[in-house]
Structures are given as structure tokens and as C-alpha cells.
Image (cartoon, rainbow, N blue to C red; front, side, top):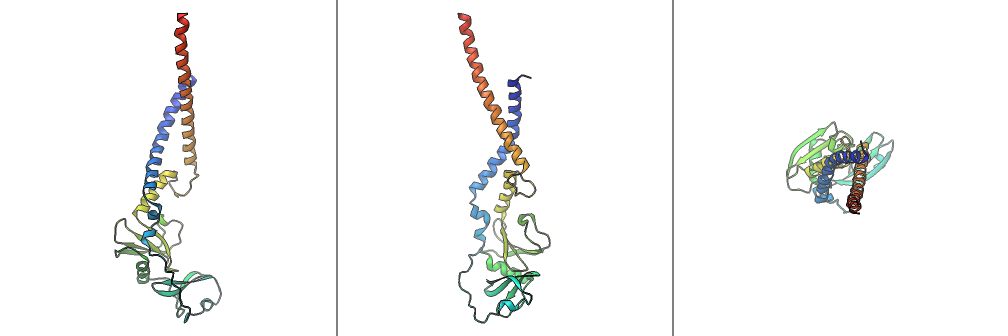
Amino acid sequence: MRLPALARTSHKWLALIVAVQAVFWTLSGLYMTAVHIDIIHGDHLVRPASTAPIALNGLVEPTSLLPGGAYLVKLDRQVGAPVYVVDGVPGKMLFDARNGELLSPLDEAAARDRAISLYAGQGGVTKIELLDEVPGEIRGRPAPIWRVQFEGMWKPTLYISPQSGELVAKRHDLWRIFDFVWMFHIMDYEEREDVNNILLRVATWMAVATSATGAWLLLYSFRRRRRVRKAPAKAAA
């Protein structure tokens, strides 16, 4: 096969394959630019953290909560009450800072109250469940975890840690769509995190090869036209 024919065939099939992925890149990129990233993150679902100081009068000494010591103790406010979030040897635990009572693991009622206190929307809770396995939309987080779903458009959902009462993640359908199109955009169809995976690199080099063969065919067409124009002139001479 002559080189021009080989380049033309290679360019045609490479362009066809790359064009399919280019459509996914374009559509996913359009969605990711059309919807503001703050909306995707779900910042509008959660009330701003309170900046009011917590009075220390009457609070128990945090060092007395774990005789064996703790790695980290954080004074926080949950559902309007002061609490200690303790990262100790057994793991994270939650204590009432006023009397030292162990609050964790949170039961369903406590998890519901905590989620309602965090939620910035108007709707009520439609579903709450304790998950022993972490769903894909919050992959990488520890289990068990409370999933609290609220009324409203896009199915707003908060994930609450039963051990610390902390907000672990916030999700809604716009985020879920983003996660889906992001998978096609970076071509990581499993973890949806690796932006340097082998498929993406192959597609990138295929796009480079398509451009290279197209450029070669363009130069070849110019040269061919020049030869065709020169031939009649010689014949006339």
C-alpha cells in the first residue's frame, strides 16, 4: 500500500474512533461548565457553621473522658449542645461536653436530629438508613454510616458519621450526574478518580496520530495540486 493511501486509511479510522470519545469529552465538559462547581459540591444544602463561641463554664475536662489518652479532642456544637469529638485509641467517639456522657454510636433518632440541624433546605426527611457498606457515591469513606435523604428536587442526601456525628458527605442528583459524566471525561470507568489512566493516554495519543496523519495528507494534497498545474505547462512548451 502506498504511503498516501495508508495515511488516508489510518486517518479515517483514527478520526472515527477519536470522534466518539470527543463527543463524550464535549458533552461532559459542557455539563461541567454549565453547572457551577459550588452547586455540584452541595454547599447550598448545609447551613453555615456557627461562629459563636462556646462557653467553657461547666464543661468536663476532656482528658478525663479517655484514661488511656486520646490523639485529638475537638470541642464542637451539635444540635445546639457542646460536644467533644474524640479521636482515641478505639476510634472516633462523641461525648456530651457538659456531663461526659458517651453519645456514640448515634441511633436513628440522634442521626435524624443531627441531619436536620445541618440541612439548609425546607423539606423533611424522607428516608434514613444505616449502611454497613459504603455506596459508590461516597467511596473511600468509612462504614457504617447514616444516609439521610430529604424531600426536594434532586434528592438531597446527607451522610452522617455514627461515631462522631460529623457530616461526612453531601450529595444530590446534580452531583451524581457530574460524577457520571466525569467518568466519561477522564475515561476511568471503575474508580472515576485516575486522570492519568491508560485509556485516557491511549485516546490522547490516538488524537495526536489523527492530527499528524491529517496534517500529512493536507501537505500531500498541496504538493499534488502543484504537480498537476505544472504538467499542462510543460505539454504546451
